Image (cartoon, rainbow, N blue to C red; front, side):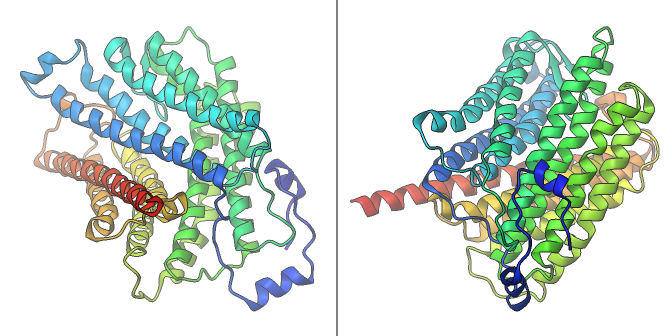
Length: 490
């Protein structure tokens, strides 16, 4: 198998020609898909990104509570004036999707960086974390001090206010520096493509996809007319870059699946070179993004459809073989150590949600709540994989491994809650219930519509509990690790 030299240059790799030694390794021994060993510098930086990821989840949980209070008579009078429900919804989504994903990407990419050789280099590697942290805090504060109009745009919903925009620019600056570091200071794959090398390629490819997304955002910013109404402006502005970002999150999910299967004692029946090829297919597909900008006007239907086609094509070709391989790697069920059971629960729940979201995507016709059911399934599938990866990495970061019933239960509570959520949306979508509306605007006429949206709400509440349980499990593991280190020092 040959590797396209353009892909290797784009991902910042140095692949030597496969020699006899590499052939012996892949042929005589099963591939082990394990992340590189964590260095002291990488550990400190990864801990910072982990704290930001937890803060994002806890913040989104807080705003989900505010969503309920904003609809509660009497209590809503104590909240800021205006349509605080939609304001809280914007910040909730941005924290639980944008900030969470960027923070986990920062955590994983930081483990693959070359150690900085000077104090200035160490400060540079910490700069993205500081900028993203301040930006996330500013977005949350804007909901109370300068909410503006809530704009429910796809990918990055907005508060059309100076404070929120400034905070988002600060967060974007942190993301830009983070991606540049992930591209320019990563450890190369190496001369032999083993399991760890294939995972490195997947991490590199996810950073390249993020760079393409940033390019798309900048391209749209230069071309979208500022005279458009806020809703149309932000919808077009974030469409191309938002689609490209999905390749980043999906690649991180695929890396996580492979690591978690290996950690559970399974063997993935794919060679590292085949895995690298599948990652490369997903990476090639992201370059449909600049082609869409070159071929069509940014506000045209053809431009939008080309992004959608590229995401479906690349995702399907790369993901389907890996889904089958991961399932084969997990079969037959085996007795696991307590610290490994949460990992298996996370990868199984992740695959269930991601596949459900993909299947729902095939049934979409028109603009109804089947669309959010599709992307909720896929996005939550990615989230569950990253939760499992964090569980797996906690001991390497100096904390205790999560164990016990709560840690095993958490992925299923979160996953089943989201599954009920999307089933309710699909049910209601069959009746034509429109997306991005709430309350009386939904115009629920039949019993089926009411029951469907009720199931959606019940599943959403269960998923919120699952998200908060994740934060609780991780915080307990972090406190336990800190206590253990204190006892050792004494």
